[in-house]
Length: 443
Ligand code: GUN
Ligand code: ZN
Image 1 (cartoon, protein in one colour):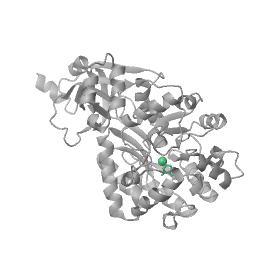
Image 2: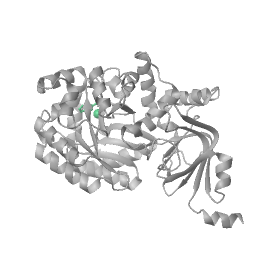
Image 3: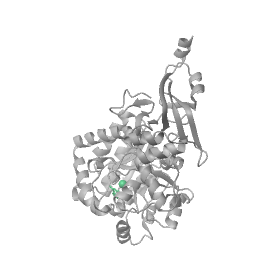
Image 4: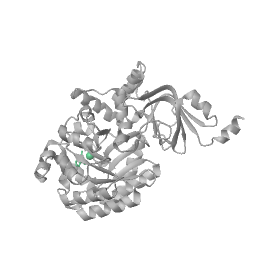
């Protein structure tokens, strides 16, 4: 009889473990089930609950028992540059010199298709290995770079939003497009890839200094013609950058106004860094329902400044997600980003707790990208993206975890001490992937 009941539910897979997930509906809602389970079918979450109940409900399911490991939602990286994997951890300079000396030379190599493919494949594998199942990604100015990443993401069913970078001034000649080419190439990519599988297009002016007013105008037009796409760019990351924008756009009252005037500030506009903003600018960004990507490892690495997370959050309508900003950032691991986000939150006097931090790397990010109906929490109906975190993945972490008195303590220790080595497995759209060397480890 058990077998025949099993035949009735052939595609259900149950992962058991310690379920920890933010929940939609209340800003600090959390589900914490020590003996929990997540049932998956056809790339979607079917049920989340006490393991005993879920196992009873789907007796024919295949079961992946993860014991005391944590089951958390797939992480969301709201701001990352895949071409910069090739120059991550290049030290010593502030933003504008760092762009000149490291970033632009590295991005120039993406004129070569084979290079695009090789780096896109590596990056997509590393997203999975770091537990990142949704990412909003910059390519380079070359359309082939965005294409390569779309292909690599599609093959793994990752939820990737990306676009070709647009820049027509203040960068090396061979990295420039024109206003018209930026519009046409972006449109062509958008039409080819937006909505295919879990892929979406992001209109991507690099930042105000590298786009002429005409280019911003045309990209604003493209965005108005395709209101459902994401817009991504950088905003107020560095003091020298802000001064430069003041010189380049003297008619605008502040940096945010440059993007506003060109129709680039709206729901699903994702502004990287956004450190040096007035309350007035934050207010306007919130009123437009725009989003910010907090990129703490990058902000510290490049000496850009301390983002005030709680201050930003007090502005109604403003959404804030977490970004690695690799290669300005130094790790693809959201755990590593949360480590530094915590320390920055201490520096600015408003520390985040473990559950707020988990939410920042998951559901807040999903909201920032306008994807809260699809990803960001373990809830029935959402995409089957989840990460199995191992609190015993290093000797110190194992030792510390043994003394943890609560889920919050355990989670916090994982954030301070963990990285991709703590990712035991990642489920991407229901497909289980185990990083090299982890297969065969017992629960
Ligand atoms: N501002 C403009 N381009 C970039 C970039 O590639 N990285 C960072 N961190 N900031 C930028
Ligand atoms: Zn960036």
